[in-house]
Picture (cartoon, helix red, strand yellow):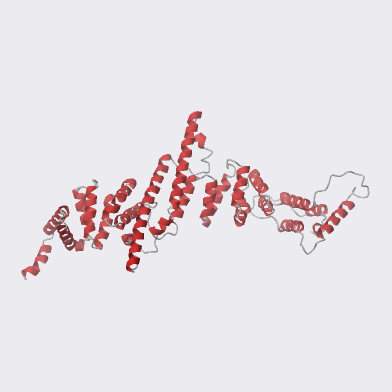
Length: 463
């Protein structure tokens, strides 16, 4: 080490060969032995002399000249022609590279390149040696993110590997790392660079739902749904173009798109169209419920009462819960339909959207209507129950038996009689003959099955 510090680079090399050995596996995720790290650090310190020693470069140059003079054949006679020596900084740089390539790991060499702003060399080494993913993540990606240099990294990758095929494994590993760490905006930037439109659309949907606790907040984030739909539309156009080009060449489509599907997520055209329809319907739901919640908040503010959204009471969920969306499972989709049905000024206002939700996702219509009806009954909104039954009947999807079953399912068994009588009175007041017939039929049937019920009802009159 003393020879190295004195600038005797050749002598230092000779001495270090006796103690340094090449690693058995250069793919190890470390920077090599401590001695190697000290050597590289010393050379880097000599590359960056301290401002407090202004004559250090002159001293170092003199030591190098002395070393050359005492080498065999290097003294006295200056007649011998020699190639010009490299500049001191370049020579020290080459010396560090000598030690790293001879005794270091791939990670140590890549980190050295990155530290000295030689990102292109670092990437070229990674690609030529087919280094493990972890070397790219630790040696290239993380430093680039810390410096805000992701765009620069992407540009170099595109120059070195225009099709992104050779570096695809590193890009996929980078996406997985960013997702694990929750760096979704950086993930989205990388997905756009990769032209991975399907995954980019998924990330946009996450941006839409993340952190929202109401449909007012979802309304403010609906631009992400528009972007998701644009990504899927672009993907669909690319698939159609690829099939058209394959047909013109008279070769099967899979082979023509195999390279593009190697690391980009693929999806059938029918699935893409289905997802686009879901996004479009969710946009419609979002605009409707956002308008309903905003109106409820405005009304509450005008009356100086606590804001009480009709859509939040539809679910019975606390304010801290995330609002359901159509991107969840069947039960969540049923919940969305109930929110829409109960969120408007009346049942009819949102019934068209509800009907589309049921049809598009093949939901159990009776389950949707029953859940909404039970909540209306609990709130004693019997006029709304009549509206619900009328909308169900007019939709053409329910028979008379379905309507009867809906009424029965909406009512709690222990309170069924009094509740049906209340609904009947409301129907009589509204001259709703259909609802009157349903209620009277129900009361007649259940009075026959439960003879004690009418006795209990008539007992006060007997007295």
